[in-house]
Length: 352
Image (cartoon, rainbow, N blue to C red; front, side):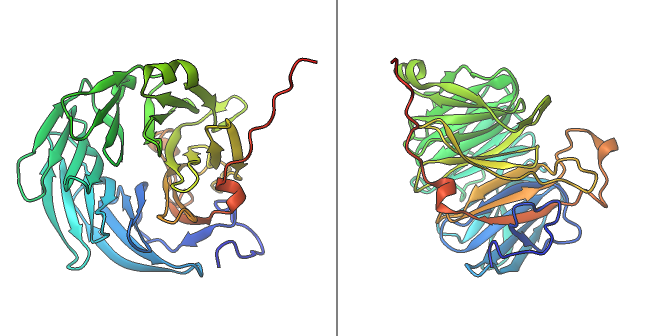
């Protein structure tokens, strides 16, 4: 059962979440994405492979499929009907993994590793972002891109919500566009002073979140008036003088709240509208007491489960990595309503 009582909590699981049995050869985990149509989720890894599990409300998981590539897989996204998963990575290509046949076919190509992928069901379009400083549109039946957009720098982060696409690049670049108007790119100045790690579009599409390596999140709006009135930043994933990267952010589709997760080994739930942290989770650590970084995570389609992965993020280099003790873990957290439901804004004291 999710959240069942445990005699002694492992160091990597202080919140008593459900641990998914992982393959023994699993390397650092680059993405964890849920099917938009059924109770399945996918995980991609630096070991060149992608995996699919099924899960249920009783807290059971079942390994269903594996796809082995030739180079590390950096990104994944599902087709809207849950029939397949797009996989992008260091081989510069994107493959569509059809789950019924367990076959993967190449559907996109770049000139450098593919860092981000997104599927736009309204237009039957695959969107890819690469370190070759381009984003590209693909009709998956054609070997040539339907559109190639030039960017000033490498693509590090990307998020698509319906028709709004936001791309974060190296040198803190932020670019927003509507998918139907790929030539009209709105470039925005980042509120953050350090490298962008992740972006997430608001449910109402009026703006987006930006997370950086400096343990800080920016709440950014698209309209100039909202930028003046509503933009703000806040610190998170810090412990005294230690500052950790914000690696992943996801919005809750029902409540519009969001979760951040970072290299400090924690994930926290927030409400941007009331500017409150709803819940802070306990920190996952390795046996050497170093934080176990949360490298990726997302909500399932119902918003009742938050899936996340713990794995070494290479921020301290190869010399600090011990594969025997710093293993990757796949975790499922059962979300309680008070963690994800907005709370009334605390009244501010007026002048007496």
